[in-house]
Amino acid sequence: MGVSLKKVCVHNGHVFEIPKKEYSEMRRPEFAKQDILMMEMAYETQNRKPIRILRIVFDTLSFDDNGVYSTQVAILTDEFYVRFSYAMYNSNLNERPLPLPRAPIIPSKDDIYVLKMYITKKYPTISDVFPEWVDYSILKSKELYLENTNKFKDSHKNSLGDEQI
View (cartoon, rainbow, N blue to C red):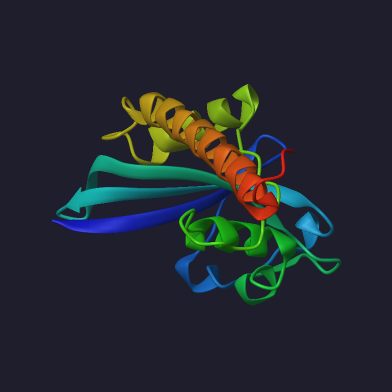
């Protein structure tokens, strides 16, 4: 048994696989100056065949003027700062107030349909549970957003001390 990771982008009704060698920097001139939906799927394998989905996460990748997405550049963005702030937040400490939480990335019905067709063709052994995992991923994203919204509120209350918001 093993675990594999698959990353794909969805754009204009098409799925584009992200080769492992491009995980840190991807060049797609057709995506220049665009934010593109990305799905990351971790799955368990047996004899190199997928047998079970472990996780699905949706995100957006922001491509620069030349159609390049770089994880090194992404780390320097405000979006990364927001994610890192929430990951490191400890409500027991008097910390700086948190920035607004990042809204969940929710794929459109059309994007979900295109992904379902891709999974059915590429990974038929796990395609029957794919829709449930998409729903679960969306639900978890919404729950995390709600949790982070509460942290945001608490961090601002804590930063004011005895004052009221």
